[in-house]
Image (tube, rainbow, N blue to C red; front, side, top):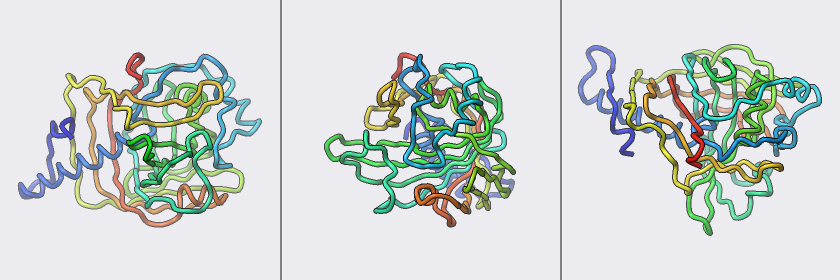
Length: 297
């Protein structure tokens, strides 16, 4: 993509020019995949000025709010978009094959005519956000429709350890964020685990190749995604949120190929969304990623 051709790459001292060129291509592919599919990368239409967060549900039992969670989330402030995010501990992203059969993970509001594409998992610790640092593990479904050409995405599972981001993730973007306990770190070569009553998701990584740094110039500013590339997050109070704007200008990142090992225990739905196994993926650290500019949705 033209946006990602504006980058610089540097390998370890002594790498050949061809290896550095391959690293640049790798960086572009990983960051493009992250930007095009990450829940934190594409914006929502409007902040919903209701208590919409309370009624947002999920096809995955572990993503549904308990009364205890509601009490914690209810106390949090409302922080509308735009949001700026930084992750110095990094974000792991891994790709999984299209889902055929098994539990239905798309809600009925958007499941009609959906043709499954690849699924993705994410594990990260955001070091700077408008509501402070927090951990997150999430799953993402991508799919197409023959009657409405394009690629669409939906996240039915997103657990965090911050009541503040749970409230605003639900109200601002329709994500079914629920609360979990976290241990560890998503840093490359280490392990991050999220746990709740009767379930757990553990994600670890093994690095491949080398780091490739990249930066995007400030003049890029915000980019509006096409209607054919959008999130669909049903919200009973706010309709289906379709997310489309992202600020790339001034963002810097480092990417690395990795093998991601996942171990999941819990409901059939959770194990279908984030199955146990070893998957190809990447590790990304980034600064100043902005999303959801009002008026570009």
